[in-house]
Image (cartoon, rainbow, N blue to C red; front, side, top):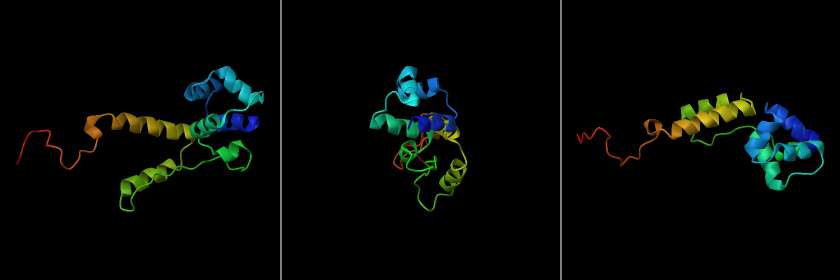
Length: 127
């Protein structure tokens, strides 16, 4: 498994220090995983897979295909989400993380948030 952790980190184009930071562990702990000195707990394994964009099966050596894929669950009638999904399928784990970070920034900005149907018009115009 240790070799797979290194390969997953490299697949995601992350340094050991950056992956450790994202996981909330010390670089020396991650180094121990990568050298086979100790194994990550199941949640740690899931974190590595999620951050690196691979499957847990890949990390465990059950499959040779690293990519976990990326699917946005949307309605069949939303062409913008379909387009987003098509673009996302072409991105590396690092690229997907940038998309997630950007989407998070947009979602935190009221200018880009959906307004509920019952929300008052921000201009105050009741017409």
